[in-house]
Length: 335
Image 1 (tube, rainbow, N blue to C red):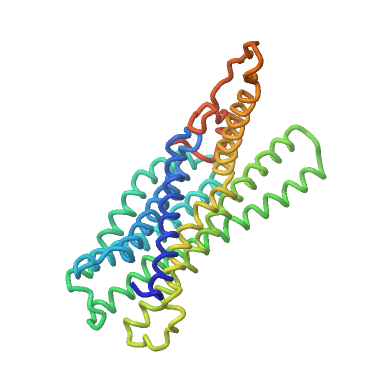
Image 2 (cartoon, rainbow, N blue to C red):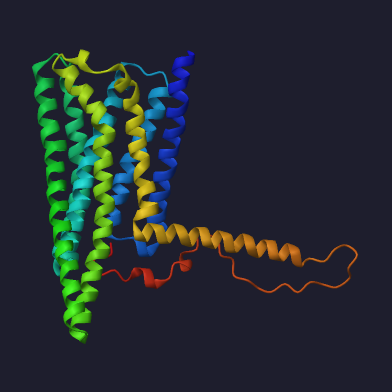
């Protein structure tokens, strides 16, 4: 392997492993902690699985010698994660739109939609990604050009139009709620006005979650833009307009885009942030306990027996560390 290829393969492989590990931790966190098992995080897990597949695909491409059909299968896998990622972000934005705009009917609606939407996203993405295999996916064929145009319009452009529209409605609605809260706080201090203010605060809290997915949607577009630009240019015979630097940078964009999501959840999504903080604080408490136990053991020259108090093992995997107070969000229906 040449020195130039090593400069690409090694960092890409390391980033791919980080993508697989980080997104696997997201799935484990949602599975282990009951308070996080809601429909919103169900879409998050679906998106995390597609990111795991992205990391696996890059590990195979840059570390395994592939034959013709192996490369074709890998291209199908890349198409699947692209379609699943875009449609999952659209679905989770729709989930937040329902939670904020229609809070009273949200639980009933999302319970019906979730069971249909997530399997449909994966099945349709697999079917659409496999279509080029029927004519070997030659970019010079008219079939391929039509396919790429239709897929980009239906699976990428249209979902993102819906995402932009939904986020515009969400943040306009939140701004109106915040303005209403200020008017209520000035006009009256009655119990009724305080209840309305609490409702407004809950909407504002849900808007913070919506902002996380809006940022994730933007990062997804930016990460896949070099690849999509190259694909369209190559399809229509304008590959010469694609800079070499963009070609070299495009795989790093895709991998980093898949790594951004778990970082966003950990630092910006409230339930993930609480869970991570609880795990870290529990681990610190456990280490402090062990340290205090070691310090309480007498030296060899002492003859007294140390008093060892019984202390509950705060291992990071215990579900009872997460108290019920984090499970009071009326806008996140249980799975």
